[in-house]
Length: 185
Image 1 (cartoon, rainbow, N blue to C red):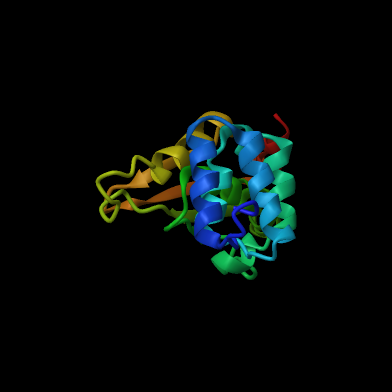
Image 2: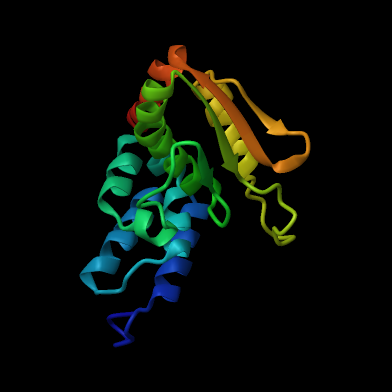
């Protein structure tokens, strides 16, 4: 684009990052994402979803570091999110995983230390509003993180298939703190 003297916009970056993610070129996706700030093109939710869907980014220290320095919390309205509920609607699997790890390792332990027991609700949706061409399953990705990776007791609510309930006790604090360390696998 620079050679053709075409000014890149958020849509062109998003398309390129998404193409890199789908072809397994996570390093190039990350370079493009970082180039957005150099060209003064602010990333949007689509940009974050595309870059965090790269498995090597979302499941490594790169994902945690990128989340910590980006403005994704502001875009998602996470500045004052509570310890007992989080809404992951509109996120891709990769972004949901990163946001969930951050929430579980920061907000939830503080509240659990105070209350000794805590029931949390994670709103994921269950694909009812997902477009036919989309294969992302935030609910399943969240369950895998909670149950398989962290060993927490989590279940889809029978009356609301778009929400996961997690019942926590003090014994779960090490697992919650390890959620932040899951970026360092």
